[in-house]
Image (cartoon, rainbow, N blue to C red; front, side, top):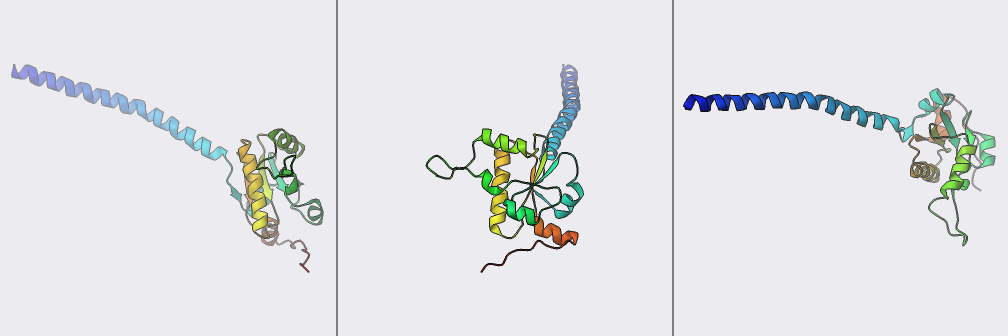
Length: 179
């Protein structure tokens, strides 16, 4: 009787070992699949900030749009070569009662974005001059707008156009001095 119990216990242990091996074997592909899904998801979204070097190396590539947020006059004086202009003001919206709204209606934004040559597959790089907190606030606001619309391929040029000029050895744009 003792040996029968021992054989039964050995049989259970063998069964558990085999089940554990099957479970581990089945978990490896599952774990690998999860890893690939998460890795792919994280690599699809663009980095929030890109360097002047990145812009210099990628600005002429298909699928990349450099979006300059300066007003039209400033854009005419200076802009990153190849950049399209869309003044920050057009990204803002007021209600009928002239109350600033958090976001421009999506239909209006979609038309604006389409006119700029941007689609769902475009990596948009937002550029300001980089002269202060106001520039960063403008870029951040437009960045948030793209994200709110579900566009993940959006970045901000770190340091702005001025830093890009400095690092590329180009003359910085002239700025009018406050009086």
